[in-house]
Length: 584
Ligand code: ZN
Image (cartoon, rainbow, N blue to C red; front, side, top):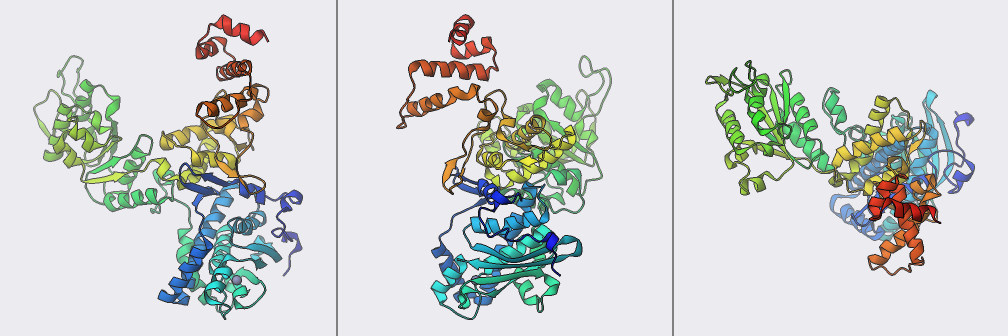
C-alpha cells in the first residue's frame, strides 16, 4: 500500500522545514496570514476572523455542556465545531496557494492547527496517492489543549477527548481532497497515554464508521463547507457574482430569497458600492417575473426635466423636441420589474407621480391624457436614510411607506470583512480573464492590508483596486501592495502581523520602498515628524534641513517627478523647487 513517491516524510514535524523543503505554504507563509487590527477589534488568520480564547474558558464550556447535555452530544458539538474550522481553512489555503499540490496543501492543515495553538503535530506516517484514492495519515499529538482542559475537569478516564481536533483534521482533509476522510484518536492523553495518536483514512476503510459520521454529521457539513454565497439553483450570472459567507451578507441573501417569490415592493438600502443593483437583479431572477423584462433606471443620472418622460413616456408634441411618441420605462417593464436606483434624487413632483402609479397601476405619458395600465414590480434603492429624508421634507412620507414594505439593508464591506478574501479571489479571476493576465494570487501582506482597510467605497473600491493590481502585476507574480500604489501614494496601510519570532509587528519594508529604494529615503524622517506632531514620545533625530529635503523628495515622488505639481504641493515656485532639488 505504501507509495514512497507520494509520501511526504516528516513534512509537518519540523517547524524549520521551510528552510529545507520548498513546499508551499510554509509555516512562515501561514504565520504571515495572521493580522491584528486592534483599531477594528479584529484578528485575522488566513483571511478569516478569529479570536483569542482562554483555555480555562474552553474547559469550563466543555464541562458545563457535558453536565447539561451529556458527553456524547458535547463530543458531537465540538467535533462539528472543529470540522467547520478545518473545512474553512482547507478552502482558504487552497484558494490562497493555487500553485500548491495536494500533498503540500495538506501539510498546511496541521501547521495551521499548531499555529492556532491547539496542538503540536508529529508525523508518524503519511501516504497519499490521489490517483489511486489512497490516503493514510498517522500523527502523534503533543500538548493538546483539549486534553489539558479535559484532564483538569474530569481527570484520566476511558474516553478520548481531542474532539475538536479530530473534527478539524477530518474537515480539513475531506474538504481539501473532496472525499470523506475520517480521523480517529486511537490513543489519547486523557485515557492515560503519554501523547495522542491519531489515524486518518477514507471513511469506507474504517469499521463501524457510522459512529464517527454521527459526530461529524458529515453529509450536512460537507455541503455547508461549499464556498459560494448563494445556494440558489442554477448558476446564473449574478448568482456567481454574489460572493460571501459573512453573517451580514448571508442575512441579506436570506431576506432576498424570502421576498423574491412574492410581488412585494422591495427597498434596498446601503452605502454606495455595496451592490444594490446586483441584489435587485438577483431578486428579479429568483422571482415569478423572471421571464419578463428587468428595466433599471438610476434616477440620479437624469436631469429633472427628463425624469418624467423617461419614466412615463412622452406623447408627440408634448414639448419642443418631442417629435414622436415613445414609451417610458414603466411601459417597457410591463409584466416585469422596474429597478429605480437613487430614488431620493426624484423631485417631490416626480415622487407624487410615482406614488400615483404605485397606487393606481396606471401611467399617463407626459403630454398625454390617456391612462395606460401597467403591471410592474417596483424595486427601489437609496444610499440615504429615507426616514431622515422624510423628516427633512425632501421625500414624501406616503411614498416612503409605499416603498418601505420590505426593506433590505445591504451591509458595507467593513461590516462583512470575512468576505474580503472571497471577493478578492472573485475579482482576481474576473479581471485576469478580462485582461488576459495570469496573476497567480495575493501576498499575505496584501490580504492583511485589505482586511484592515476601511473601504469607504465598498465593493466597488475593492473591485477597482484588484483590477488595478491585475494590470500592474506581472504574469505569474503575486499581487502585492505596491501594485496598487499610484505614484508614491499608497491607498493601503499595512496591518499588524506576526514577525519571524512570533511577535506582533508591522510587516517591515513597505513594498513601495522595495521598488524605489533610492527615492524612498525621505519617508522615515517625515514619519517621525508626523508622530512627533501627533504628540508621540519620539525623538525627531533629523535636522531641519533633512526634513526639508524629505518634504521635497516626497513631493517629487508624489508628482512623479513633475516640478510644477510638486511645487504646488509645497507652496513654492517652480524655480525655488528646482533650485532646492538641483542645488544639493
Ligand atoms: Zn487526545
